[in-house]
Each structure stands twice: as C-alpha cells, then as structure tokens.
Image (cartoon, rainbow, N blue to C red; front, top):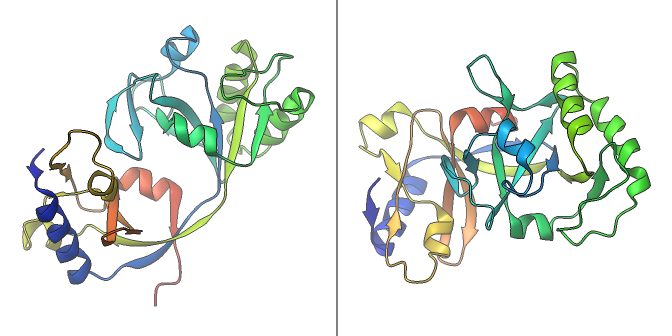
Length: 243
C-alpha cells in the first residue's frame, strides 16, 4: 500500500468527490453482541480469526486486545457469517474499545447469572435471558440460531448487546471506469487524514476494487470518505430511491 502526504491525500479525495455523484443508502439497524477481550476468554480464540475487520482496517488487521473488542452482528434476521471453508463462523468484526464504552442502547444478554463488568456496566442482569430469547427469535435460519445458542450456552458470563439504529448515508460506489480510466486503485480514508496519530507524517492509502463503497462524511477540512469493502457494504446497506 502506498503512502502520500496529507495535501496529496486531500487532493485525491477532492478529485474523486468532484468527479462522481454520491447516491443515497441506508445502513441497516444492527444488533451487536460484544464479547470480552480475546486472550482473556480462550473460547473466543477458537471461534474467531486472528485477522479481524474493523471500520479502520477494511482489509483486516491482527487483533489487539488493548484496542478492540469482538462483535457478533445480527441484521435483518441474519447472523453475519464469514468463511468459505467447512467451519463457517460468525464474522470476525471488531469495535474500538472507545466505541463500546460510548455506545448507547446497551443491554445485558446471555444465559448466566454473571455479568461481565469490564465496560463498567451496572445493568439488570435478570433481563439477560429475556434479551437473549428476544434476539434469538429474530434469526430466521435454524442453523444460525443454533450457532448463536451454542455461543451462549458455552459462555461463562453474560455479554453486552448494543443496538445501532438505521443511518442514512451518501456513498460513491467504486466503478471499473474509476479504476481503469482514472487510474485510481488506492484512496485515503478520512480518519487517517483527520486523526493521523502521534508522529505520523503521511497517509497510508487503502486498495479499492469494483463495487467497494466510499462513504462520505464531513471533516474539519471539508468532505471526505472512508472505504467499506463490497461484501461488507452489501450485507449492511440498502439503496434508497436514487432518482
């Protein structure tokens, strides 16, 4: 992956936004089951991959328990899955710990009388079982429902359920023309320009492929975007009536 200066990253961002029309999409509401930190819970090591996906690492990154917590996602009655092998598993998606701590709509979920407390929650543990069965009832595929059930029957504590509401977004889809005619094969993400981190003096570009999504957002320097890969985007977003 290439690296460019901040000015070059901003110029490339502006070039793409000026050249392409954004379309309206909705990010679907999602029920997120948040697990403890990998390494603290041995079972999790068997169920997820060490290479995880997050908003900031669309191509995958090595799991770091000081930065991330694993999330199992249910959307429109479907447990999001990953894996083309014989052992298909819930997708290895991660949230930054800061996002977990700031999230609203928090509930306990599980089949046990103990609540994990690392997030500082003082929640009604008695509601955990009720919340579990309510969530399980939304899953339409019996196999996926059994996977969820196996998770919770083997888990030693209750977990955290965080519901994220639907969100309207403006999105530029990556096209063959963008790649072949404009020669754009890598792009900067907004957060790498806006919050580069201490001692970082340039921006690492993210590879893009046809069908990927560039999600627009307002930044301190104007409009920018971040990348969501095609498979992830199509699982979590639906097009609005783009006239």
